[in-house]
Length: 113
Image (cartoon, rainbow, N blue to C red; front, top):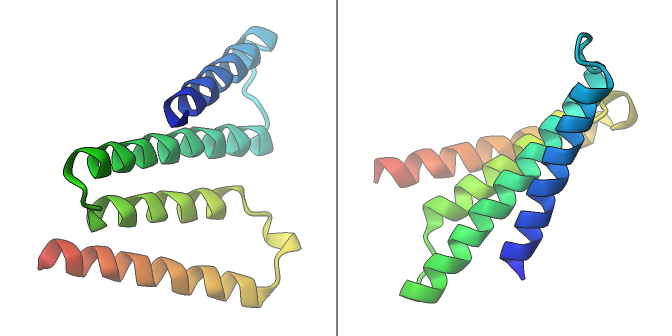
């Protein structure tokens, strides 16, 4: 089911990109639309990473922390990219920054150790 979901999402992303370039091949899409497409692309990446995690768990019966941390980093990066700063409180932005620092330091210490 996860594979089907990732496949459908990838096809939808491809359709959106083709529609953008067919609609206006000369001009670039707006900044908001590009951010939306990039967020959609990162969503596909998150799905692929989760699929890889499930495949690894099914074959080895172990969850690899590196893969989980990388999925979390991609997910928070997607959130930051599609975030509308005008609509979010400063406390939420501080919380997102703390999450990013925690994930990055965890990934660093995991790779170092």
